[in-house]
Length: 329
Image (cartoon, rainbow, N blue to C red; front, top):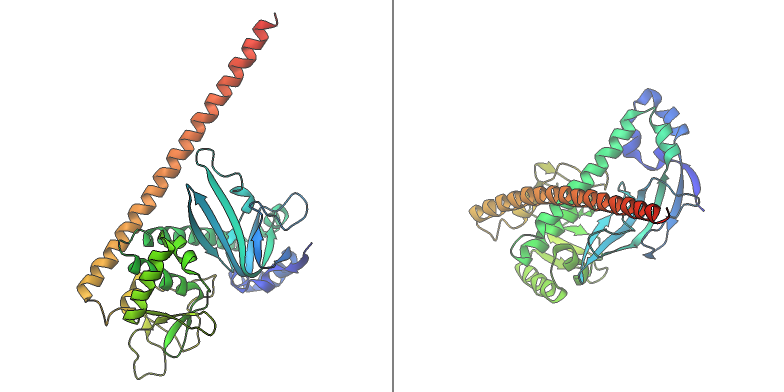
């Protein structure tokens, strides 16, 4: 069992979306049940809330891993504060594909139950509903971007771009590097970019040799080489945004306007010809667009196939019932 808390006290980004003159009332009304999730493996259809279960779960903090296994290969998605999930929705898997779904807690987390009662109460403040839909849209966009990253030809490019992609969300600007405090194994990195662990190990050695990436032995934090430092006490400009040392690159909810491609470009400017970088960035953008279109097409095809399958099952049941009725006369 969890405890009831005021959601807006634990999600400042949502609170800011409510007009100031009604924010206090929304704060009092929007109570949610919050449950703590310790580290470890979760059941595929885990529901930490008692009863019929919520419509969905909102991550307040911590880090979850969502894995999909198909034909002996596994892909992993990391989810953190502000993300919305519904473990029960994909627990049944696919009617057409033999997939296995897995959930695990990478860092102890807290989740808030978003149930029908909350949705009814929140309708008084449409800005909140809009904010939740925007978060789902951002999750979809980030997933499509990661699919595009996994299509880059060179594993070294996939790894470096993935790390800057993750740094947008979880990175912090250090004195000499951008720190990525995610203890990701070579196997986990490979699952996120579609590569085997030995290949990832070799690619990381190449990136470490180039000075692009290194791992701090003391705590396992990944360090990404920042763009060339300037005489300013501020960190270098990242996609037009100047960040002081120690500042987070992203808060996990309202991602700042950083460009993964632009950050990766700046980080490697000292080693890669500018014209080649422009070409790579354009290839990434094109691949992203093509991947998004393929995903949309595949989803439509799957929906049509499910409709046809459902129609065939209904027809078979109707014919069977008719045959049994005729035989009973």
